[in-house]
Image (cartoon, rainbow, N blue to C red; front, side, top):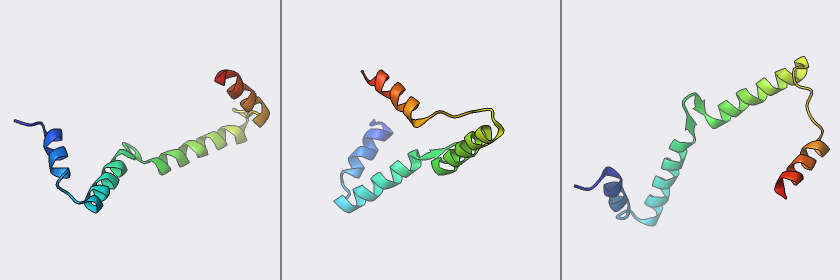
Length: 76
């Protein structure tokens, strides 16, 4: 007996190109969800948290130059 994945793969192959593209879009969208909601909402919460840390002085931030210097040293 075929696995569910094998069966779905076989059946998806019967779809025309447009239908397969729509199926792919729907599957990718389903991966973009987190347990807490969608990625946009999660990223917004993270940005708000980081801004609050910066505004309160808990995080002093870094200059672009220091970030780029570190990035370049890691890339070598």
